Image 1: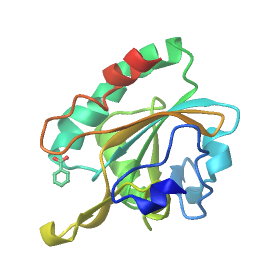
Image 2: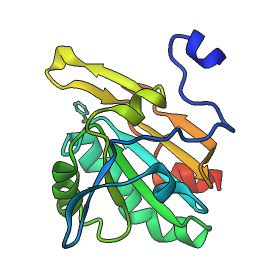
Image 3: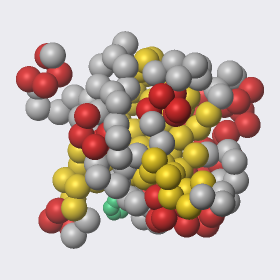
Image 4: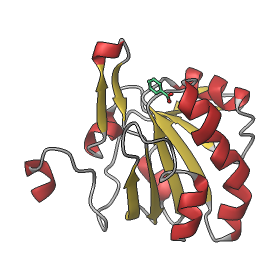
Amino acid sequence: MFRSLLARMPINIGERIPSCKTLRVMKDGEGVVPISVDELFKGKKVVMFGVPGAFTPGCSKTHCPSFVAGADQLRAKGVDSVVCMAVNDAYVMHAWGESQKVGDKILMVGDGSAELTKSLDVVKDLTDAGLGVRCERFAAIVDDGVVKHFVLEPPNAGITKTTAEAMLSLL
Ligand code: BEZ
């Protein structure tokens, strides 16, 4: 793929979200369980947003709240599911979701081993900041597993292009 020859470019429009064996979610009564890419995307229109870290300021004050506020409008425009992913474990994602009051509006998915992050080509290396490997801030519209839109938030320019409002404008 050309993508792999280029320095920084995420998954292409029209590509399928690759399978991933290490995604985890917290499920009521079951604790932390694996979730497959098929379970997340098959037969659904999904808006997925990725954040560099649960509980970090931009993600907590702006990015996640935009999707809590916008989830109903996204659903009204045909979105079946809103997924939030980060390179954090599912316990942390669950606790962050509770603190953000996501309820059943957003599915909080832990990509703790960064497998999906790596295969989407959205690795953000924050090792020097003491945070290790994380994912870039992004948002995507995925239809039945196929990427229709994929937006990377440019660094150090606020959070505007990957919010729920921005995704609404693409639907
Ligand atoms: C944030 O504010 O979202 C953030 C801060 C430090 C590292 C990663 C994300």
